Image (cartoon, rainbow, N blue to C red; front, side):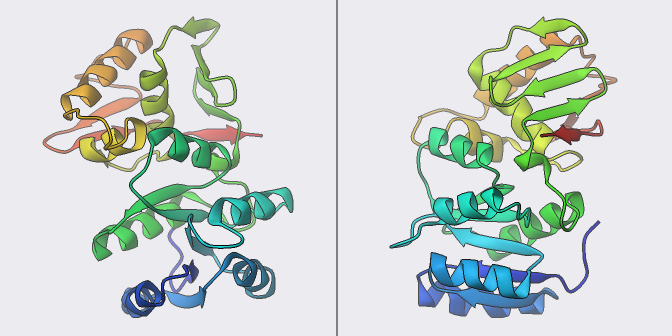
Length: 239
């Protein structure tokens, strides 16, 4: 459930970004804290227990990924939204495996930052591990093993390409949320590859064949006409 007046900690070593984002989020109804490096971030997280952390990946000293790692090792499940410049999709996939709830590329549209924060707060519960922190994702008889990159439906293993698995994983990490084709392309392929959104549609078709899905009456993957796709099943996470 989205939490009204949630406390958000924004961590970035760029003063101009903090000066821009803080009033933006306050106007959206959030209580906003800031930190300029990883060590200050860990101190504020422990002392003030924010509801969500917006965390820059590339900072001098203690970078964002190390901050996240220390949080999760300490059993702190505060949701984290990474900020990063456009990079390799493999780096982003690793960040999600390490327990980040989502990431957003710089530069970003203000409305997109607010929407991502609201979506994370809706699907997480304070003090409890989020789906991003779980090894297993389950929706009915569909089960994903995120560590070994394997999926099965009931007792039947699904023979998925790595890209198709990554698309399914991303959709299941964001249940109920409409995901644009461009966002999936960015998340799974990265903009370093010269591909169009048709690549996403091809992998969705692969997933539907493997799952035995009827696109007209989908159980799991729903088309959002003119936009992208949504995972419509309920998702449970297991450590």
